[in-house]
Image (cartoon, rainbow over all chains, first blue to last red; front, side):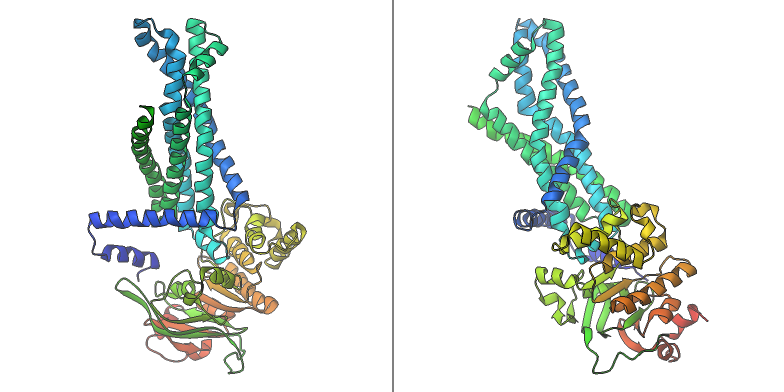
Length: 268
Length: 257
């Protein structure tokens, strides 16, 4: 006798749609999911306690990895850029180059990719596991709106936390660069920061913030969508976690390209 | 069988199902199904696995939508009310899941506090604490208060699941396979708990099961889900002794003393 899950699976198989049409249906579902997020997130009652807990979780989960990666990136980027600049006797431009590169692209992109791996997979797996073990249904039947409690808080938390993590990555990266420049050129911290900050414009800061917000939103909404709609038991949980990372990383690169094109219009 | 007459005209119907239809794709699960739950009774829904017993109670609680038919719960038609009204209705209807569905990231205390803190904002911290302790005491698991769900046995998880549902003091309880996967002794304990809940909290209940011992011990009335409807209804003995060709193989297979 077929179980309820088999029946659902059969129902999906019975739909006379091709892969192309199925892709559009998924896209429609994603936009519907996003629409529900905007509706639930900004209408009372607010889940402030859970939002704060999620902000802490997301920041705490990524902090160590981001610190290490940011520091090494700053240090290595400086080391690899030196030979090219020294050919023109321009090693004094290193702080500016590192500052611009980190703030404009490296920090948002690195933070986004790390968060996609660390936070996105975690959200996908957590919600996926809750879905297949009926914990989401249990929340629903105990008169709690699970979308508001689980999805809205995670998406808002990631969107709020990502800009903070991005500027933290940029700062740690600068420290890595400072270490390299101090050892090789004997540059002081004051001179280094003065030189790198002078070359950074408000537009760089705005662009970086917008990208970080976009990346945070993307990572969390993809993770939540995959987890919230997972099925087929433990296999489904694994798939949800995996697709959360893969799709979020792909979208982050697409968004990076689009943002660079848009913000370059303001630079000219 | 627990003899008690609930089906008199004078007894209020807390759940009324008429002409219910539900299909998944081409597979019809419920067809023109009708069933009533009377105030204060324990109604057992018996049937083979995969026949749609769980679908029935998920429709009652609004987790699934019926294709057609009437589902009236506590005088409200479930698929006609707003989401907010449905949430309010769910405060009055408890649902105990087959696999307990305890929140793995929370302790037993937090699991029980969760529905209370979110739905009873008028309660003080002390009142919440007392309610949790009282409910754990009612299911005989006070010692597990600080344990994680992963540290509990199957029977304990079921009990905690029931306690979490009961903490909101629902008028109706829906039990989905309460004894599935449990040994006979633990199953007996769960059956006793279901009867205790009925007597102590005056709940009406639908118990979904394929366990005949459970049906016999907890049910005031039995409805068999055969061929997508509940045409076979009555006391356990009436259904058991009906000689119905469709029902008999189920009883033969599940032989009990």
